[in-house]
Length: 391
Image (tube, rainbow, N blue to C red; front, top):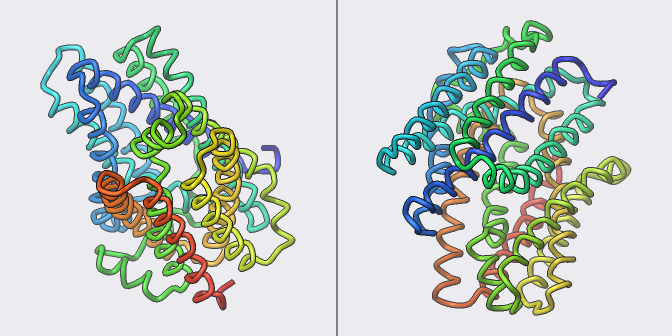
């Protein structure tokens, strides 16, 4: 971390504590709702509500970005999340109706919908071009470690502290995140002089329509959502139990090896700089297509674990190189519009693909679902060939 600016370090640690808080509160909320209702379906409403909130905030975000400075948005959102978490704690303590709990989860995710695009756009402000790849690698590694450790640590803390104690821990982490955000010097490199010019969501779409990089990123995100959707818990648990004939806990092992693969991908990401970006994308998504197909037709447990690990490695390399290229090529004004629209497209794609794949899995079989997911990655290969001139 020595070669990075203090501003990046403050951003890094603010995201570290904020993301840890987000993961832990979701664990606490799912556990609380399941204990309250004894219904898996009710607990599954949490990710649906969160994704819907991301989608909705995408429409409003351009108005917010055009009227308020970035630091104010980050500090206000994280502070408001602290207040919402305190309200959530009181709601759980007094056992108020479930609809209010879901409403608070929606509001917290709604605020994250403004914060997440900003976090991606601030890296080029704080670092030189030659450090952007390394900075993205640091952020991505941190996010992956948080996801792995939060679910493991969260389970332990849940046993010791119960849901309410876990929410208190989240509140403390959120406060620490606010402190780091307030340490960031937003006056350098004209961060606060450049305010996003988009005044409406329609103008965000128009500005993205004029950039080939934005078009590629957003189409890539939408198509990839159909590939990612087969790896969600609902499909994977059923696949492990019915097709691999293994106990359900093997889903956790397969999921863990995926995240380990992500971490391994960040270790070898610098070696990809000697290859052409076009070749990395085309070959990478072709390999993801093959891995997904093999996973769907495979019936050997340990081979499934290996494929999950390899999927994580390739997915991480593609993700980091793509976002680094986007951040290098787009100016700051267009970059925030691109990430705003991209988050909306991701949320929409996640909802559509999850519903579609789950329905197909119920009415057909899960192997068909993995074949469709494989074809979605293959379609990204064709998309990459279509946009080959920009790389």
